[in-house]
Amino acid sequence: MSGREHWQKFARLMDYVELTSGALLRVTPQYHFQVISHDPDDNIFSDCAITAGADFIVTEDHHFSPLTNAGYHPKPITPAEFISKFL
Image 1: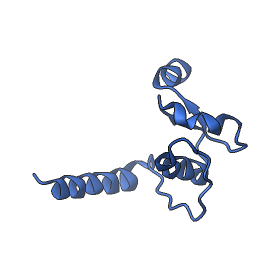
Image 2: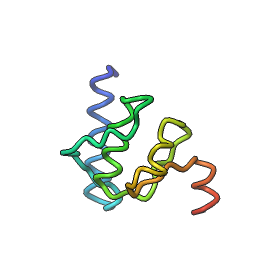
Image 3: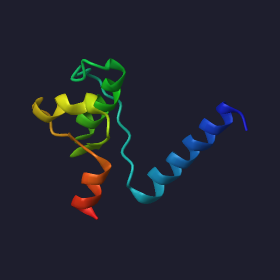
Image 4: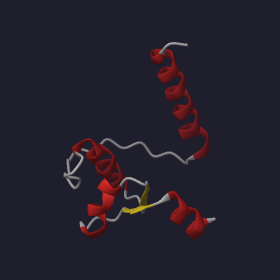
């Protein structure tokens, strides 16, 4: 399976999840918040989380730490913290 075929299959899976479970929210940020300065490529993830009104971004990437005090709702949380808090 080529890379393109792999991503097309993944996109179909996401379409299925969105249609059947309601557990997927697709967002297209219209504003770039530019919260992550040390790794600007990470901004797309924080922009999506802010736009979606997410509570958390589950990550071990320390570049997301500026979200903690940025005044936006999503806060970075490690996978271990997420598991201990919610499972």
